Image 1 (cartoon, rainbow, N blue to C red):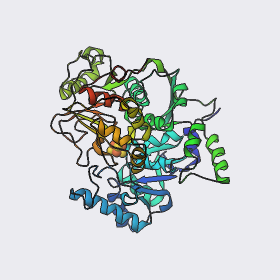
Image 2: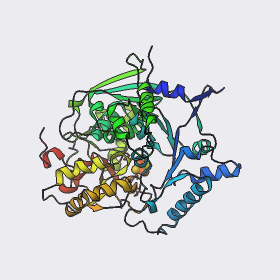
Image 3: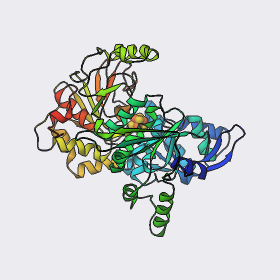
Image 4: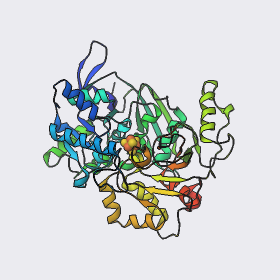
Length: 472
Ligand code: SF4
């Protein structure tokens, strides 16, 4: 019987089976940032321990960094203190730090892949939920808590149970104007936010295989939003082509050896899965969330579902969502007036995400609606430089978008980019929980970058295919 990639990578990284029934798993790569690492370093030092593998530990600053001006010291004293703590810790422990002053900073899940740190067959962890992003390369990648960050710093291992594996096939082709973000939102809608609990998600099928690495990262990024502990895609020629020549990717004779290993970890054709679900790419519409979880979504042409369409045990949370979002069940999701538009985050802050938007704006006279504040926030300084080199920053600015510095920005709003009051935001990020974008009463609609751009221009939730005349 063949094995899945998950089983192969898990087994190869198992140090030992623990008496608890869990496994001690070696972590090939540990990514750290300023929010979840300071306490972990303090705990380490309280016990007189050092970082066991500084050469497998890489740091960046992303959550708290301002996007209007990154001049130091930051106006937010707490943010400044967190960054100083990170700077001191990486210096003390000899950890490679992608620093803003070197033009290397960015969101941890953008910086790792763009530097070639994220590779197939690896175990990867980071004190951030969306570490599942790295699974796009055929790695098994987990978000971890602060005490686990401490454990990995000290031992380079984690204790974990084995997951079940669900294969999610998306077959056929997507229709024009439908993106990787719509695919991942669709899957969460179908399987629910808890549908993946206890599972690793293996994404497969024609639609996934045709995706670029950026698109695959968008899909895997949100595996965690469907409850899965991690999500991955089997590595293939697209993966290898992306990695070739990247700073930390193998080169010379080591390249061929690495590719042979990467191919060997692919799921075997006769691998056994705990569950298999199959969807048709042609059934997927541009998706928009209407509620307070990423599964509460519909196609842009659809209506917000009525309470009767939910099971009895879902109805309380659905009623809470209607009330918080101030939406009427049965009304169209399109046409809701927005206040803010945000294109960025580790879900959709890579070059091709901005390219998709530039392709619909270029040569047209589209302008952001006067009542909308629209932010374009590159996922990393490298992405920003590429955007400027291509002249795309000007395209955004001429259309009325604010072109900002790299960071997490309004995804989590641990920086000055925050919603105010009950503002409604069209966002390319990954969470629409209550208060996620910085105001305790702020409201978030998740959608793809071109859908955010369409909403920014129309001033309301709009089908991007109609506004931008995308042929279907
Ligand atoms: S962009 Fe959002 S989800 Fe991604 S690392 Fe930053 S805060 Fe977390």
